[in-house]
Length: 104
Image (tube, rainbow, N blue to C red; front, side):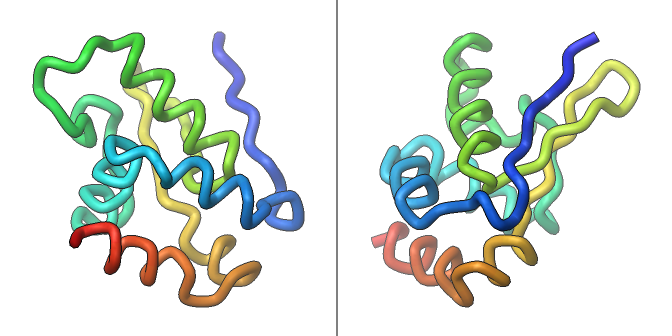
C-alpha cells in the first residue's frame, strides 16, 4: 500500500510553493482543482487528456511535497485536496494571487 508523505503546515515554505507553481502544468492542475471545490482525482485534474500517467504522477508528487495538496486513497482512486487553509495560515492570500496572475 502506498503511503503518501505530506509536509506539516509549519514545513510549507514560500520557496516550495513558488517552485511547485512555477510550472504551467502544475498551475493549471491547481487552478482546475480550485474550480472544483478543491478536490479531484488525478485523472480529473489532468491538464492534458493525453498526458502520460508517469508525468501526471510526477506533477502531483511535486504539489504534494510542496504542501499544496493532500493525497489520500478512496477505494482504488487517489483523491487530491487543496490545502488552502494550511497555505493561507502560512501565507495569507498567496495562492489566490498566484492563480489570479498565472492565468494571464
